Image (cartoon, rainbow, N blue to C red):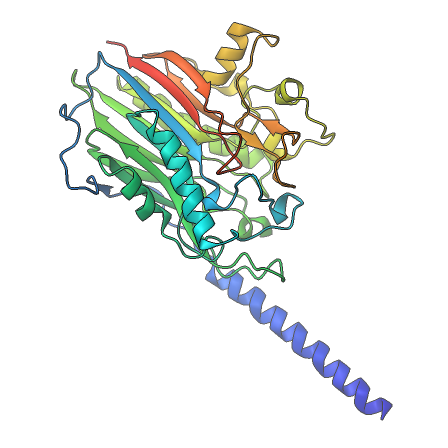
Length: 371
């Protein structure tokens, strides 16, 4: 009898080991990265209307740009995430996803923006109940041209076991009231070790918008690595991004890079927001401000330097997602704009939504293009 029980136990253990090996093989062989320098389609407005009456950007007009990480429609104030120490992995429901995406869109629409740079937009995901968030956003911004750049297409992730994160496809979305004549996807360097299976297919998109003076406004939609990336990878990502930005500025174009940089973009967020964490994660360490190319400005850092630490009162752009938000979570400024010296910043601030729809608050910049 004991021998029979032992055989059954051994059989079960062997079957589990085989299942795990098969699953690991599936994940590894399913892994694939998109090629670099892929042309992207710039889609016309969803409502079929013509774009802004001035096809080219009026180089004398005041313009508004906003960036927001939408947290794939799950990260409202009640959500925590298993990779940050919480338990959540999937949005509470399909309706929650729709409500969160539409809530963010309503707040952004109220700004009357000229351009939007959005991150973590799912087009088909277990974690977001298969809601096509890009289609939802195109309905929310029907008068805007749009560009989608995929930066995540995972095999089915069977963890956590109680609610698997699943298979997900997501990306970056750029919206413009003006014609986008050309768009490109650049693949960022990522770790080649096992951690690459945890990271996204990191990239940034480049969208070109003609200006009335013959130059171009070049928008970079950015989402740098968070999980599993060491400093050498982060440095390589910044170097690649900067190289493209500097090239565009040297050509006489206007350059704005906005998005989620997964670093402390003022360098002293812990002091500003009274954070309690002792060991700062890699994605919350101070940004390498010394490495920013000459002629470019990190908007939030410039504002902090101008106003001084005591007077700086911008809301944070990101909160600790290890637990639901109650107003006391650790917070950082991780979302930012970096812009060239021919872009005049007229106003720069965090749009404080109190993390109602995402674990990130949007950032808004009012600007003018210099001749």
